[in-house]
Image (cartoon, rainbow over all chains, first blue to last red; front, side, top):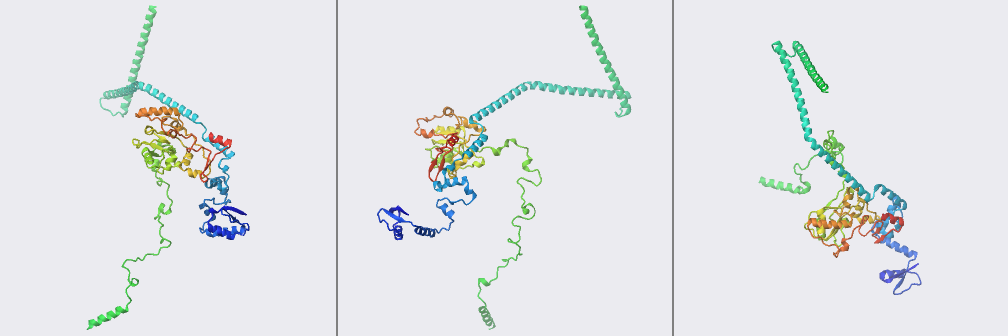
Length: 246
Length: 294
């Protein structure tokens, strides 16, 4: 098999050596075109020379990489069979990598999965999100306003509530004070009865105190009854007056 | 003559002795220590781990653990306002002063629209999308001396910054990018070398949708008419004469914006960029086109 090569692209020494080596009888010594003989043995010789010229000591893969070619032509491990690796090879070494560029796009199945993922990860459109945010903001505003109204109404009643509470406390304190005074009076009366200071824990004292208390209660009861009677009488009189008026 | 004999004798003795050299002098006193021979590589020492306890056993306690005490980090009551702080979006800042510096030192080309990709390419700004960084926060430092007319796109900006840029006749857009898009923008080359089709930009999350749809903040989802109204309003607020955009000779450049789904200027989602062959591959499949256009 012969190839035509432009002379200007070949170094003259290279050309002459080729001419020397060529065995083809129909060699054209044209100015423009030279026929290069590349029969198998010549090719093998060239390859051997090339191999000797490569003094880098690199592995074939590394040699390929530094010369801008993909490292492996045939897969060396499972990872080299993946789509990702093929895409990478295309991305790095272009069409020379021998990868079909149609691999770069997702397949129908992948596309379907992508769509499904997006329908879960981004379920709402921008408009929907905007609306929901707006609604949330309105709700928040409403809540704040209501709380403010509530606070204002409570603040208006605050003085009254304060007064009520203070009254309640004072009333309780007065009651306690009155009860204490009553007790003290009773004790004093008992003491006066005996004519000397007696230990309040004494039995006689206790008896006397109980007696006094009983008397006091009786008196109180009587007073209450009298008051009741008085009211009743007043009512009856009132009724009588009404009847007589009629 | 006894002393003479002695001298000669001693000289003869000296002559018979070997000459003084480095090989036969005695060491300085104390220069050599007779140490015990320890076993092992480092003379039987502790290998730097110390003696006894946690250190020697190299069972390092977890951070904050105080060997049975109530640890300091748990001693305080719960502080709810820090809740979720590690999930919040961050916007690493760059100031107007720095942008001006990038322009003055010819690291940013103002004849083209500026976005995060071009700012990262200047080499003086960096961010990490995997650390919750969501792009640029343009701060107002140096806004008084900012004097460039730019079409800039950032991820966060304040009102003063917007005013400073529009005062000079420039335009600013605030745009959201999801982390995946930001990874692409940070290093486009490495993405193109993976041989994948450019994806679409995703929509912003609900808590920032207001920001990116508001015309006051020049959001990329805002109505352009409202934006022009807001430009005028802002100029009146800050008291400067708003340069007329339409009569500008760079009008086309200043009006250039990305599509809300677009990541790179001039490149559409779905395209495959091959840097080796210097070519762009565009899909023709109907389904793919529909997907990338949605």
